[in-house]
Structure formats: structure tokens, C-alpha cells
Amino acid sequence: MGKLKYLFILHILLFSSCSNSTDYKIERKFKSVINNENCQLEFYFPEIEVKGSNVNLSELNGILEKYADHEYYGQRCDETKIKKRIVKGDYVITLQTEDILSIEFTTDISQSGQQAIPTVYHSLVMNPKKINEKEYSLIQLGPESLFSNFDRGVLKKYVEKFNKTNNSIVNLLAYDSGSTYAITWGLTRDNFILYVGGEGEWFGYDKIEIPIAEIKNNR
Image (tube, rainbow, N blue to C red; front, side, top):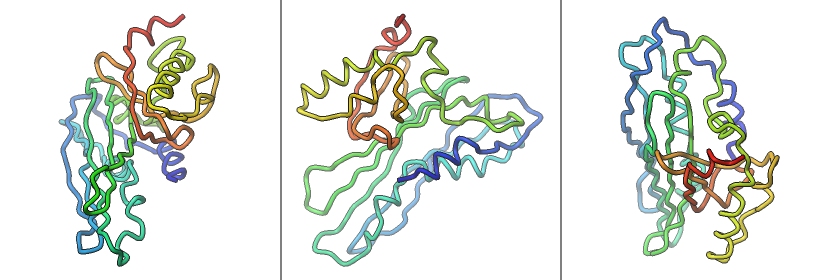
């Protein structure tokens, strides 16, 4: 799911600009794909604007609109069925500075009359300063680029505790030192957020908050 999207993100060309400004803002946008007796599919998504810049961000903002694959979860949702399928997407900016933009995307999926709503998390951490560079840039940052000597082994004890507390079976191999499994993560000012349950697939079903001090102090 979404594999081509991530390959595209890793190689997207951000258009050139003579401005080096990192003064940017996030506009909240809404899209309703379908809403009838069988299906409701709608979501909010972020759109970036760079103040005082003539950079064309339509391609980047197109990625942000589709980043959480909301429409994937609404596939065949318009087929006639006993209960209406409801897919609602949203996002939260968990950290926004000149150097780091961390966005948490959520997708809630339910049937009408159903109380428990499963949530799927996606997350994007990027460096806004890359927007104006005249080169192919990595939009999705890895934790290794922000924390020197980053070791996934620091995360593992938290995932083990999560498994025990919640009677879960999150894949611990993804959190071994040197593992290359795709993991989903984000940041707040104080915490490293780990989205677990979809290791290798760029999403999660639950989240664990780990003090950033523990990540930084790892040796």
C-alpha cells in the first residue's frame, strides 16, 4: 500500500526559487470525495505556503493531500451495503519550526452505528528549508538525520512495554539496532512519537511517546 508514493517522495524535485526564506505557514484544507447513503469519505489536509516566495508548491501540496492514503481506505466504499462506511481524515501539526515540520495524519474508519472507531496513523517529518533548494531533496527525514548516534534499540524497550501492557504483538525486529524496517515516527518539542503496528508499511495503529532526552542521551 502506497509504495509508489514513498518512492516518489524520496525523489521529488522541489522547484527552484531565488528566495532562501523559511517563513512559511500551513493552510488547513478540506476535501469531500463522496457522501451518500452508502459511503462518506472526507478529510482535512495541510497546504504549505512560503511567504514572499515565487516557488511553485503545487506538486508538494499534492503529495500532502494524498499522503495519508485516505482514499485507499475508501476503496469500493460506495457499493451498496447494510451499513454506511464512514472514512474521515484529519491532521495535527505536532511540531513547527524553521528547521522541522512534523505532521500527524489520522484516518478514522467506521460503519454507521459502530462505537469503536479504528484509527490509522501516518506521519511526515520534513525540513522546510529544503523547499527552496535547487536539487532533489529528501522530504521525509529519518531520525538518524536529526539525532546523532541514533539507535533503534533505545525504542525497543518502550515497544516491549507496550506489547505487554496492551497484549499486542508489535514487530520487535523493526526496533533492533541496525534494522532497516520502515518505522513511522514524529516529534513534539519534548517527545519522540512512535507509531506502531504497521512496521515496514509506513503507518501505525497506536502511538508511544518517548522523551526526546532519552533519544539524545543515547550513547
